[in-house]
Image (cartoon, rainbow, N blue to C red):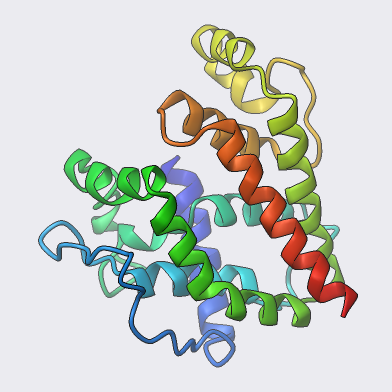
Length: 229
């Protein structure tokens, strides 16, 4: 886990330096439905979460392309793990801050868990950032648009075929096997991390399969709508 976040942070740092102008979002004040994050818990803010995530989403960095397994694999991690920026304070290279938020159960439960449990927070966040993301999607290179659409299609299929008992049995039996291929022993592209995310949300009681499926449908519909215009 820490190795993955290290790699992602290096990717984020390179992308941020190269595309600072592209990702200079003017987000303004967060929606009132999103609770203020207690600064005694973390220096994380809703604006910082969005900007960190958007940097990866909107980047048109040329060193990644559709033939790069690094790109595919870590775009999935980035899209599903947008809180990595909370591991650091002001300096992304300051690895002494590693795990600042997620290793603190109080912070995790009061910020991240609460967000998963609150449809109103999720809807408010999406309504707030949707125009920025849809505008950025229009400008992405075709390989990256294709990758994101493949991710959504893969997630939908995982949710429709999700077998919690089978996942849990393999998770308890062989963690490495579970992470690599899952109970069906299939690894499509490098999207297995989507399965991990889905399993953890159900296993931890964060989100139901139907709630996640609803969000996939919303995202697919919104992307399709801008591509048809």
